[in-house]
Image (cartoon, rainbow, N blue to C red; front, side):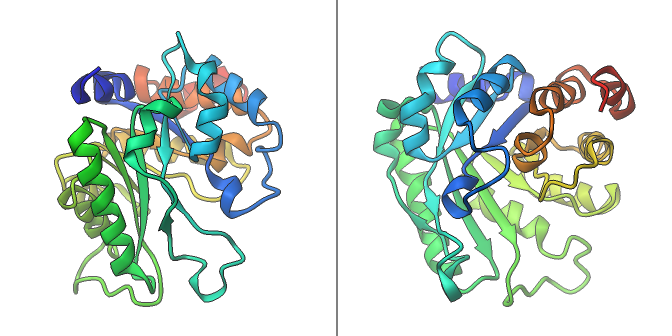
Length: 265
């Protein structure tokens, strides 16, 4: 399978329902991740396009995705809550060369823009895109505008979020994870910042499924290509229902109200 074929599998018709479940490395116990196999089976049943996870988890569970429309990509960045002043500084804990043999079809790495250690994180993401380029693997860039050193351009209504998306593109990522900026007008500046698919994050679980689904509907209308959303799904009381509702919005064009009503959310 070449890179274009991998991207088409990950983003059928250019749209993606991606669920990251890499959170257990940085924070554990983590609600919703206690029974990983059951969660993965539910996500596969919901026909999510991609599960993003750390390499050990992909090695252990990627066989569950065989013969399904769900793929796994390996998140190569890591840090834990115990890192003190450097807890937000991500380091690489893997290499693109091991992804296929572990059962993944793409790579992911993170940069916390504005955080001490930003330069090293940018260098690490650049290494991932270079190594992945040579072997035909797509790369997801999780570039977040956060941290005490964040210094948005004057007048930037996105407060650095558009630049974060641009960073992912310019450093060689094929897909960018981004954050909702609060309104459609400013979010359009994010989705127009780079000619690659933008997948909107969900943030911490709020328990308010309808608000999350409405945000996704608005993001799609403003140019997003889907979601890369973890806690709002796996920490939900009914992860399967939440994932299926998101699929209805992303791949079938349903309104958030229709999707929420259909799955009693």
